[in-house]
Image 1 (spheres, one colour):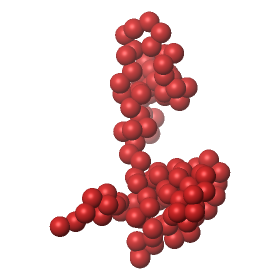
Image 2: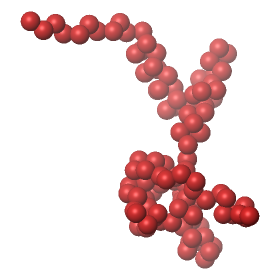
Image 3: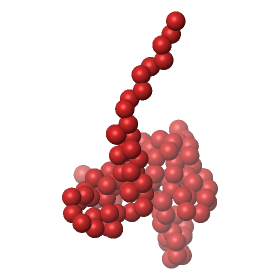
Length: 121
């Protein structure tokens, strides 16, 4: 029977471009601040380790173990857009700037007439 720590390890293989939460084990165990941060997967190695780039600082992490990573699903990043109560006054005040920009872009795209394909002679 697997213990709960083993069952929470990364269940799927990450691919380049995925966002993950990474905990630097050396920083964590030595009680240094800033040990956990969001990264983007740059490379996946055959041995199950990953090269990561910290989103906020640009720090490069070589051969990160999947045991110290958690996939950050896009559904969590988009939840404020998906659940925004757009039918109430002041709804936009509770949304992030990115959510408003995305909705504005979607609205503009939805209201455009589709272009006809170019005719070929």
